[in-house]
Image (cartoon, rainbow, N blue to C red):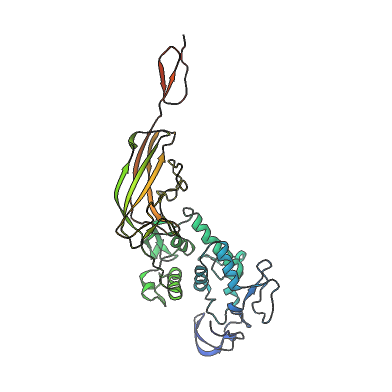
Length: 380
C-alpha cells in the first residue's frame, strides 16, 4: 500500500459527482463532508466490543483495540472463511485496501453488508468490525444452508442488472457452494460488455460486483480455476430385486464410475470424493442406514485415489423403510467441501413391499400377516 495521504494534501485527478478534476484541487478540498485527517486501513484499529476506533484521530490509541488485519483474521477463523475472500470482498466493495486517503463511509460500509441496491445502507451494520463480522457470518450461512437462498448448485437464471425488465437474465450453472455464496451476496452476473472491458465500464446493463471479485482475486492470488470433477457410469450392480424390496431389508448398490474430469479423486485429504443425496441436494434419504456418513452421504470412494480415465467404486448399502410404496433415489458424486460433479445422472427406482410375518397357533394352521400385527384369530 502506498504512503497514506493523511492530510489530503495531494492533488486530485479523476471525476467526482460528475465533475472531472486534473489536479486543480487538493484531496482535502474535494468534499466538505469528508475532511482530513484520513486513516488508512493499515493504521486502523477498533475495539470490537465498544466499537471505539481511531478513524480521523491521528495518534489516538484505542483502549482494547485491534488492527483491521486482526479483525479480518479473527472473523475468517471464527466462520471458517478463506481470509482471501474477505480481503477481496472489502476491496471490491469499498477499495479500502489500496486507498491512501479513505473516507469514513468506506469503513462504515466496508463489505457492503446491509447495503441493498434499491435503498440506503442500514445503519444497524455500520462500522468496520460489524461489516467484516456480518459478511463472514453470512458466507458461512450460505455454505451451511445451501437450499435456503436464491441461488443454488445447478442451473440458475441470474439477472445482469437490478432492472431485469430491460436487461434480462443469463442461465448460469453453479458447480459449488462458494460460487453460490458469491451470487447470493451480489446477485448479478456480468454481461459481455462488462467482460470485454475488465478494468473499466461496460454499458447500461452492466453490473460489476462479481466481475470485480473474480478479477481482484485472480490479480492478487492467482487463477481461481481448479481441476474439474466429472464422471460417467461404467456399471451399476445390485444384489437384490429393487422392484420388490421387502420393508426393513437391506440391499447393496455398487457404482463403478469413470473419472472423466481433470482432477484426481481421493478417498482422504481435504476433499474426499463421496456419493451424496441429490434432487434435492443434501436431502435426508429414507434409505439411510448404518455405514452411511450421514443421511445425505451414502458412500465414500473405495480406492485411495482414482486418476482421470480410471474407474472408482462406491458401494451404497440401503435399508428399506417400513412404509411400503414406490421411491426414487438420486445419488451424485461430490468432492466434499469443494464441488458437486456437474453432469452425472442417476435415477434409482425402488419399490418397497410389505414384510410378511408368520404366527403359529397351537394345534392349528400357521397364520401370515404383512402388518406385523396379530389380528383376532378364533381359537375354538
